[in-house]
Length: 597
Image (cartoon, rainbow, N blue to C red; front, side):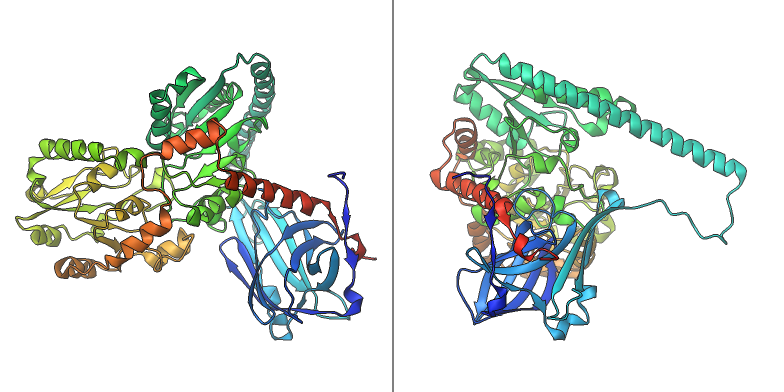
């Protein structure tokens, strides 16, 4: 059978077999959620978003609630093919096999407010917006729903005619600035276009000159050295002697350390490395891949440096500031990894790729953390270098940063009552402060309190301190994931939970998914410490949900599954099934219900 042949859908709506009515429309981050009722209730129905021209762009996930009541859901930033829902006007249809049995109408109860249920998701630093608008179709038969999707670009504000006009000198200065900006942008885009051509030629030459060895590139544009998951996989390859079977290359240079005028030469360095690679392992965002289109043979795996925290990042943050564009580095990934299959949705949502592409290998950097010999050696070194901690109860204060990125990262230290915390320690406890690496300001510990309080921020690996920590104080940081495996107390000092939720954004409900007790004021924090009120029962449930493996073989699974082709069959089947589903959507032909027919 020809895989490109259209699958023509038959229009059976006039038979009046079912009624299909939308009762609610809502949003969960980038997910459109529609509650509907279909009567008579039937199993196995499918629900498609179809354009006026009769092409299918999304299949909505369907969950039957009861007696024909449904909950339909679709990610508008990735309906299944790793790109946004295209700009168009859509209708929602219910289908039984290859038969179109109903078109979604809106309940009269919500018809009046349907115009207010759309959403504007700003992106590209606020310069563009992905807009979804709802209206009632101009049709006498029923209150049919129309959904219009548009990706728009913001224009410069011109001002009102009656505003004071800028002086001639100001006009000249503004024109000069705009011209300089245009030259820089145009020159940069021209360089990128040239780099794309160079990449394609060099990648083709690399492919034709292969000598039997595949090249594995470990890439970071965030740090000056290879760290965490990247280093764990690289080291394990070396231990297994696989550096003899693969050529391994390292590229580590922080973009933040490169002056803007040198970006083109810096980007070209990365382009050359990518062109000569067959496999790429990354640990964060790589700006070059926002615009470079890699060869399809290149297998790119995102070994995200953090576990599943609460901060919405990537496409989970659409609608907030500092978000990626519809096409970005994240869309280029062949695979991502996760500590557990149950939380794979977190990574797929933020990267804008399919959940099937997120492999539950576990986090490679956890191998060392879970190794008992490493644990004992690390404890010995920590106590040897810091004898004041030995025999004391250790409280680790390790929150995430506030702000929107590396340049604005900070922590409001005024939220800490150092004196009260110092007095609580007495002679039996110490407090270690481990701030996020992006927070450059030192912890302002008063001189007379430094016998019980210590700033350990510049120590690279927070996991080292978990071995000696008795109580962790955090907030929204992903670091609590690893600590939850210890089963020891966690306190979440979330003094700005509401502000964080509405400005930064959460990718899941915070209060129901934490491994410890949440407190909102410093008084509540101290009361919990004094009364030892920690809700420790939450840790075990959290750990079960977040970790499929608690062994020391995550690096081996990454190597075996991705480099050596030993991916478990069930995972291969899930990936293949998703690809087949996307191909089927492409072939579905709803021309029988397109406008005018």
